[in-house]
Amino acid sequence: MADSATDTDKLHRRGLMFILSSPSGAGKTTISRMLLDVEDEIMLSVSATTRPPRAGEIDGVHYHFVSDAEFDRMVEEDDFYEWAHVFGYRYGTPKGRIRNALKDGQDFLFDIDWQGTQQLKQKDEQDVVTVFILPPSLDELRRRLESRAQDSAEVIDSRMERARGEISHWAEYEYVVVNDDVDQCFEKVRRILDAERMRRTRQTGLIPFVRELMA
Ligand SMILES: Nc1nc2c(ncn2[C@@H]2O[C@H](COP(=O)(O)OP(=O)(O)O)[C@@H](O)[C@H]2O)c(=O)[nH]1
Ligand SMILES: Nc1ncnc2c1ncn2[C@@H]1O[C@H](COP(=O)(O)OP(=O)(O)O)[C@@H](O)[C@H]1O
Image (cartoon, rainbow, N blue to C red; front, side, top):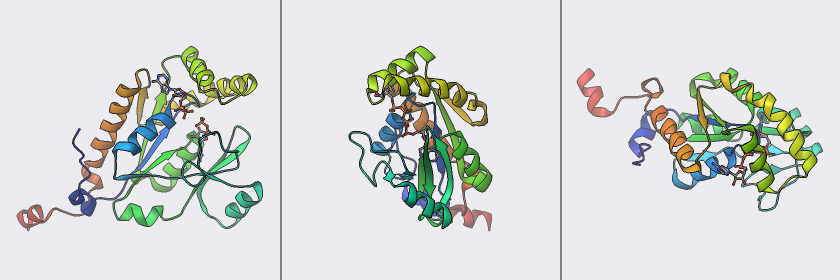
């Protein structure tokens, strides 16, 4: 697929806050990584978390792994756009350079839950695009959590329990995509991103020849 986020686009529109949420195990990390691999124009918003790293996760790349005390300090210093408790740990989106970069046309990808999505929507409705990824079934969700082999049976049970609660928030999202075949799901998510970049209300300036025509 041709990439619509050319330099010309960047000059004339605000960046997107592209949010992917799903119950744990439905595939949002997989889809996020596929998107970041092929889309040069979108950056991952790297969250801070108090949960310990999983095998293969790199500090500063997948998450900023911080202590409870460090997280407390970041909350006190108002360093977060939003933060929430998930599975007994805390997760937050650091403000960093996001707001200014959005103005410059930089798109950001957020892998955050429904609580974070609600907070970002309240703060920045016009730049936010929300996508909910559903598993094909609850049985398949359990199978994926087991195949990921990163959690004990107890933790998988609690993730399944939480999944029901998370899925109940699907109607708060603008787009819903079922992750049955991973390549098809990825293409659908990519098409959403592509279309949203072209939304007229996002354009902040006119391409010179259009401006001349309008003068
Ligand atoms: N609100 C919020 N949720 C986050 C943030 N970062 C990650 N999450 C969510 O926290 C949940 C747990 O993430 P993780 O521990 O990586 O496990 P996962 O369920 O396998 O993705 C997922 O629903 C993530 O989307 C964040 O900065 N803010
Ligand atoms: N469409 C799919 N079909 C089969 N397995 C998948 C699919 N999408 C993701 N998976 C696998 O399911 C597991 C959970 O996916 P992951 O991306 O970690 O989910 P999440 O980030 O939503 O918790 C991983 O082992 C991943 O390789």
